[in-house]
Length: 637
Image (tube, rainbow, N blue to C red):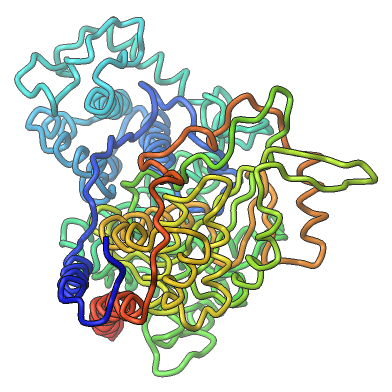
């Protein structure tokens, strides 16, 4: 094409069209297979870290595993003879996922729980075996919907998957609990008991990697599963939940009080749950933020009790950096009525009450811990195309992930320091020994997504121009991955973060990149690329930039003066020799070859074109941000 030139009407038309596309783009829809568990009867917890060592939001698989751990463990520990309150409490627990479970998994749960036969079977629960069979059928029904070829549990029964597929095969002859003969019921109950009930009850085991073993839950595993279910369902509630959702959420606390399988835990809970202040706050739950705050307070009360009994001397109130005192959550106590933290909003913060801003900070921290930006239904992968040839046989691989924001000054300084060392063959010296490795490097963006992955509502921390810059940079990562060429583009943009993305034409020309390609990608694919990166960074629990993660294990905040030594130590101690890694799996978008790149003559009009795109994005994002602020004010009166 002809170079950009002043007065070129075609160029103006293209700019206007690009601006319109950017303003109207709402994301690229993609089909996702929702997985609630992972195999026919819970398998593994999925990718590490899992319940025992994770401070990151749960994935769909981890939340599914937590849900089944709660359902099955509650069921197998029900009393043989149940009173009316216990029956209703368990029925409410079983139905809760239909109202509370987030995303597409929740839609499946709702459809199955609304099946007429399933509803009748839940309503017919009278004893422990009934409860176990209902949980068993629900789990197999979800498995049949997600994995139609999976063998239902227990395999020895030989039941066809189609007999549980209430969603995909609604007219099939499905399993009905009332039609099971006594021998089949006994076989199912025995299998469930073996899988979910420890012979010596819910005491704490000293199992290595307990969450990765297909063993009956101990007290710690059940507790973490329940907190995962409770907090995660709270943060994914709509801002104004339906009455049914509110009642379903409130019923979870009654389940702990009446039928929690661990008698010690239930005993501790029964000492504080009847507190009059708590009961009023429980009754007053009306919104998503009310639900988040009540779960937060209950969790801190449990933690304060454990600290007070010297069971968890190293723990603190959450969030740790807000320095709440144990006494604010110690119930029962002689002065609990006066000293305990209230959930109402006060004009100013006191020892027993939070003001609006502090309350919002707590809510934001809880959401950061339990909610993935953009929702639970997304790929949770942020890979770039292959940058290097596969490693040679026996060659170590050093995986380095860098988490940044597009206009973060400290991120720019870090990129400047490391850019020259980002090569396919990484070399360093450790304890007098020269080491080499094939480098697997990637850059991920950190930001907010108040929409979904499929329909993003993105908010960059440093404003709308940062968001446009991140689109362009991720497009450079996508199309110029070979030998990490895109790193030079990042470095060039970072020379003056205050004017990002205005430097894009200059940086593209300097590094022989096609500006047309980058701008087109930013308009058409950039939103999805940024949403994917935000979601992945959120799932990995990254909230400080820059952060480096080395070999998936070592976290380094900022860029300390001994960063090179830290990297080399990880290369020496945690890098492994792999024939193939995720680095060499390629990508969905092909990389532009040398013959496809054009040396574009960038003039003042080209800079104006980029500026128009930036201004268009600014108008869109600022309007959304203003709407968000108004919404926040409405939610926090």
